[in-house]
Image (cartoon, rainbow, N blue to C red; front, side, top):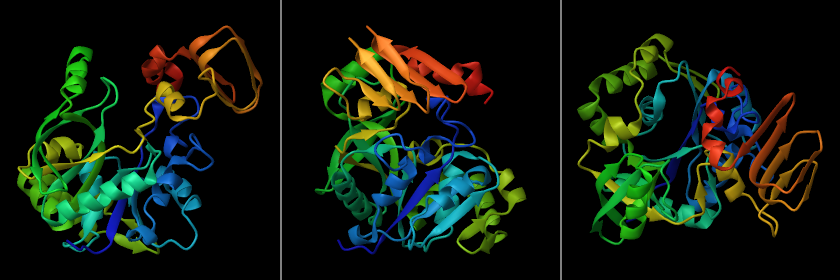
Length: 347
């Protein structure tokens, strides 16, 4: 099936507290060069070029991040920035973008803070997902599960849909370790990576069916909104009345049209410092160094410093981060708890 250009919808928000002290409310992880030379946001835009069949992006962000979005927007690339007047989670953010597109358009919803090592595999999966979306399926990317992760939701693969993908048999919330190991051994489960493809009209119809209040308020916010160059400002009062709910809970877990494409593309949500160490190139001892650092007899150590030299001897599975006056030292196992530190919470 031939379809027109795929419309990337880039969701750009959050505070990234689990990557404190480098990631902060004022400049969270999408806008940081954490893997490679560019930022995660720049890499997200770069995976969706016109040459691969993508239209100009729609970026949904908050006013606090608008300056970062515009500073990192590629020269000569068209598109639109929707400036959310408040944070209302992904169902509302996606609805705003959908209401700015034609009903027959296919939108590809991407978080702005993920790392994908294989852009070609991503684009192949995006094209398959877009073809399914054009057939009125609501499509999730099922990320190949390579370890028994307890921090991700899972998709259970159902019956095949042609040669493009599969129905989703069920959505599974974050499991405990024993269930995650069972999912991995089963082979019929994938991580839910939070990347989606929808035909605009289908998504809005399903949102209206399952969350009519969110759909109605989002439509009102767009109807009363105003354009300002590349920026679009939804009506603040109408948008503030929307319930905060993820698209997974609002739509995907309720629809009868849930599908998935399988994607093995070197994906990471860079959800904490341990995930960043895994995603980065490492030396023969498994260490990754950014900034000035000297290590002796260390293994699987991440050092990230914005200035001071870090010297370490005899450490294993440790993360050391220096950002201004803040210093973080944690084991890799403790990286999930960084977001609970007072510095991260009260930044």
